[in-house]
Length: 507
Picture (tube, rainbow, N blue to C red):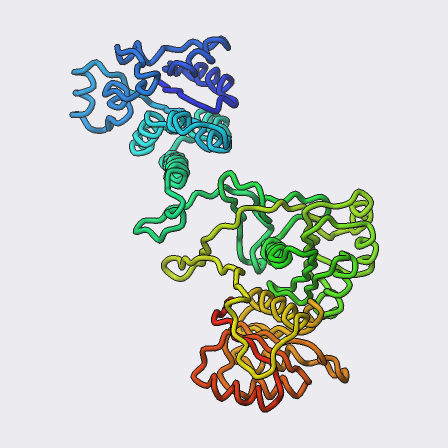
């Protein structure tokens, strides 16, 4: 039996090669791998002795040869193939071990030249791996060092069956596909990175397998984008039990919602929606104000910070049940306080380059769209009522408008002093959302607050309902066929209303 070994990642390859020799394999290898194995006492035959042709073009051409690919691709059950091997003096190759040039590691280096990057695009490796995977019924193909022991065990126990071979082949094709996707994405021009092309591929790496998905009967997994070091999936758990599927989902909502603001912000998330959110120069005050927005819903929620979590804030969080705490970093004493919690996950997250592509599965395929960007510009907004907002009211309107894009439609946000004090989410009509967002029975509770709607008011009854609670300041996209009627009602009720001419649905 003959094994062809050419690997970039040499983890475990020496021990594996020794085991192959003990099983009766002769080892063929390429330059760098062959030298490494020889230096570690492994007897190898250089591929150039098999092909009768030296490596050339600075090593670009090594295994791209009919003697190598004929030995891999020949069908053992096909007499014509076997006779052709005999005619040309080609030996069968029974096992191929290959992993590719480190393209992914190479592109991490921001100072590396394009020429060096191109040299790290493997050609012979993918061709050899694909050939072996295509002929998996006759050739074992190994791309992952973690499979070395499985191969030895299967040989020893005579368990190399069709299912085993087919599984290795599938893994090999995924390995090459991932590699090619990295290259395609890197070489794309900036304006092509997220273009909706005819063919779309994604390269993702497994991060974690949670205990289950949204429900115990659902399996789940967490993947990361290659070379992405920021964001929730790349977070570091500093304390607490393992993250669940929904922990990742809600923690991401907490992280995104507080980081769309440049000011010091605290966000409290429950089931993907902010139930508390506040901006304040003092982090502790921001936390307390966010908590006051809906202390009942905040129970068991996820709390996100966009600044280093302080000891003072950690002390104020004592006694509040929190599922996950998300922050870019923690003061030492704050972390000591938080580690006294038995189960609360305390995670540290780095800012990341926000992907511009949102993917959602549907039956039979996927829906792709750009992420909604929170880059509305107030200078493009239009005050459509006779009364105009002062500076403080406009600042609250800007705040509420941003928050409305974070909440599931039909979204209504009520805010005051850059603090969320009420919200309605996910309702089949906007009137229900307004009633949910304004359900406080405290007298004058909504005096001086502002209301934001993620999409236009379809009828004047939305304004009338909110006006019953004393709300006089509104921001919405506009665009209803009843806009004139709604503006007239707003003027009659002595309101102030701003049109943004952009909606922020989030389903």
